[in-house]
Image 1 (tube, one colour):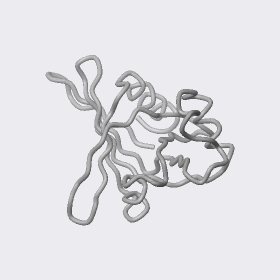
Image 2 (tube, rainbow, N blue to C red; image 1 turned 90 degrees about the vertical axis):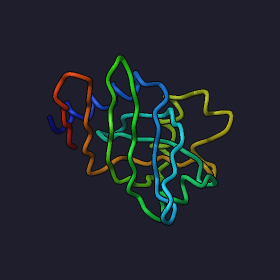
Image 3 (cartoon, rainbow, N blue to C red; image 1 turned 135 degrees about the horizontal axis):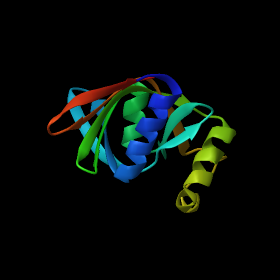
Image 4 (cartoon, one colour; image 1 turned 45 degrees about the vertical axis):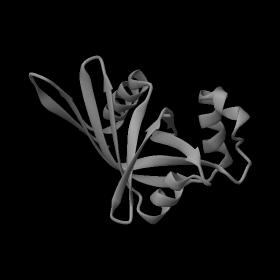
Length: 136
């Protein structure tokens, strides 16, 4: 499956997960941490973090990421390139979708960072069923 329909399926799966895990590379060391933001804006899938965090610095140095999450007995792995989007509109859209972040972030501060996922290959697996691959 590809395109908008595939992106929507990945978005909905990650929303069901609530918390998913995002992996980056730090030199020769993989780093994994929990994330909870996933948002669709202007036909792209976005994540959010703070520019002061190590994860932001790692994605700037090497934008290849992988996401893994589990929901309803299935799991997803998402390979992607994380692309920074510094536009106020993109940041505000994320903050509107996650109002609980507004205490820590704003669309005009120097810390808030939103990134969209590009060259996505997502695989949804479950025991006993063939994997489903989604690309966008």
